[in-house]
Length: 312
Ligand SMILES: Nc1nc2c(c(=O)[nH]1)N[C@@H](CN(C=O)c1ccc(C(=O)N[C@@H](CCC(=O)O)C(=O)O)cc1)CN2
Image 1 (cartoon, protein in one colour):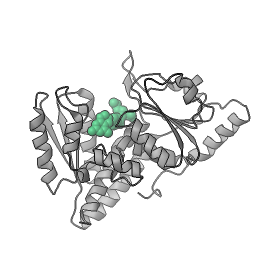
Image 2 (tube, rainbow, N blue to C red):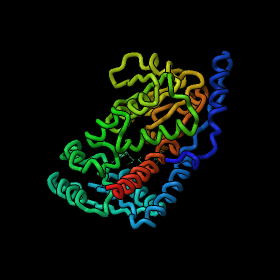
Image 3 (tube, helix red, strand yellow):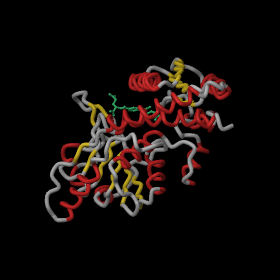
Image 4 (tube, rainbow, N blue to C red):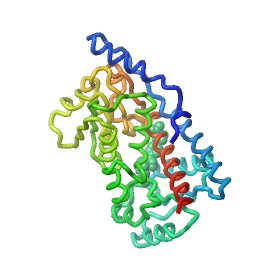
């Protein structure tokens, strides 16, 4: 994707200044708040332009989203995905299935979508109801239409550094780091959380960009000793406040993937924002940081699946 549409890189200099102040032993002050919403809007506008060009060649990118059950958060995310498609000129089809749908019935729905030439991208919204095997469902999606990048062959390709699709959240984080002009070659990157959806692919993308990567999990001893080494710290555990300011290296870029509701019903991340911001050079907020990038990169993956369909 062209980076020329991205907002002017305003982060690089302030990040470097914060790191410099930290190196000088001065207070790093308040870290800059990274605007994931603005960046996601720039990317979505670029997708809209590319989709228009593709439509002129007779192809309208099509995304099919399968939602099983009535998880309220999933319903919101799926609605937002369909709305984002519509705004960018992509077709979307949402298939809503009841929570007691059998796994076999779901597999048949996916196979039908695999055969549909108007559908370039397929995703099954996670989490699935407990009676379903998510790995089996994901493996049923045709790898060439797996716009979530979760299929085992796409996960394998990620290790080669030449992926067909990058999983949307880690891909969005790489775009944030690029837009912030964070130098990754030789940097210490620490990822907290080793899920298949975020932590593991994130580690692979950072490694491919030349960072020295540490992937922490729930068994990691003395988490702070790891996170305090990080020039780039990505936190994706689903545990609110697991990372606090004293665990952040002065001047670091902190990326918070968590989306949790606190006792007051307010959305909070996995990072204690107020204390971390006092130490970080730059930090993503929740909401408005990584979340909007996930949907923007889904559109990019769907568009590119459609563009590839013209090459066959
Ligand atoms: N099949 C998939 N399932 C899930 C994925 C995924 O990438 N593929 N990721 C998450 C949910 N998700 C997208 O599906 C998602 C989560 C959050 C956001 C977002 O924009 N968050 C906003 C806050 C939204 C709110 O008010 O609740 C933000 O952080 O600013 C977008 C997409 C799990 N399932």
